[in-house]
Image 1 (cartoon, each protein chain N blue to C red):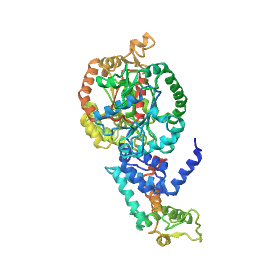
Image 2: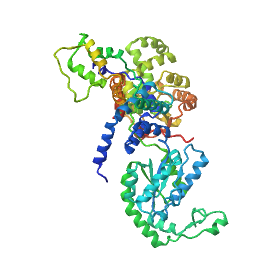
Image 3: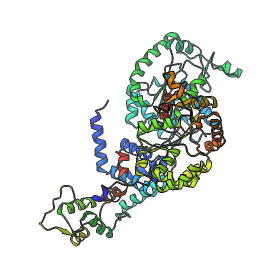
Image 4: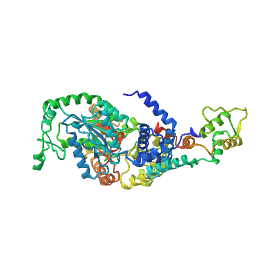
Length: 480
Length: 155
């Protein structure tokens, strides 16, 4: 049918909606669950899944050799998230196994006595309970063997983050010697690192039976044997953290990791906004981005000049302002910009905008036209660097070659003699413009809450890599 | 590791049997088309309606009714001759879900006029279709026109 082959004009609200509400991830999760469980009646299953709304709850697995501090991390987590009042508080999968009415476990000592199948089925039951479904879960030390890992996977229990603690064996053996257990609360303490403050707890502590060097060495051996076969199952969601650091450091690393979401396959057209004072390298970065990702490079000033040169109807309007060297009024800029940004190629390929908006009003106007950027970057450069970068620019009037007295000096003295400087690059001008920027900067930052601030005082390729990672990775979730 | 092959095959069969991909395509398309403030609630409401429709056998409220047969005919008849070829007719019936893949239609040598098309569509089991084929019809016809790219979302 011919109607379907014409270039389709997709209204930009659609991809924007898809991004804001993460429609792709939503559908992907639903499809995953459908395929794992393959219910006979897909529609009621889907309704139930949507109602649960637990796509974003934490699902974490912590693995590590004995004495690496897994349990300590987990208990720190419990305390921390409660104190933060996170909406999704984790529920650690308890401690002892007894009959089904009880909270599950994962403690290494106890689990040795159980067969894998029983263990996994108990876990499955526990994870189906309401609080785990709603708030998320952490599995500490499970799966222990590849067999268990596979069983868990086939049941559809997939963690979203797997943290593996690692430390040299000698450190672990020593650490384990200091392990003490409180028989009443079953909390783990340590003689050096984590000594309880209350004396009555101190008196209660007993030495667990299996912490001799031989025992620990044996357990470590088994651990190493098993872990190497478990890791490949979780390669993409894995992070190895060095456990030979203070407990708090390990914990913070783990926390930041868990809060990042992984890259998804959702379609994404970048609409990038680069903000920064004059001389921060916006045009250069925009050009690099446009080249690498085939985005449309929209430089506001350039656009206006092009309009004048083309002598289009916009150009006629703008010319008088250029001639009088006055700033072009916002309304005209908006018209030119919206004309450019609503063209088919910028909607399809995405765009990089720089040189606009200069203040909050312009930003609001941009939003109201429906051109919301989905990645905003603030390029920070100290004033001295800016002055250095700009005031040393020179141009050779004969060849047209651009030089920089520090970064790209002219090869011969003869050329150097005839170099000219653009009056716009004079120091006072640069200072004026930078000041202008900094005045409106804080308001702009307030408007674009998800903006990423970068240090642009480095070589261009480093900055480019930072920008790239900002675009390609999902936006970090802000901690409430 | 269990044979990836057999599980994968099972999964594919499951998808086909329940026409999950068409359903998911339809849900995504309608979500992006209407852009409700609360996507989950909206999806739940559609699924509820689908569920009820399936149980009671009532036709799921859909965008296309008999008046669209004319527009569909006109889409196919690009040169405004007033007739469509047999091949187009067959494809049109397939899109509407009225023709199984294996069914063979006799080509009686005449071209199909609008009247013939309309009567054929009306006389076949149009109102009693199962939900799956109606969903198939939506997702291929209406949304293909405007939201072609949406399919790429899930491919």
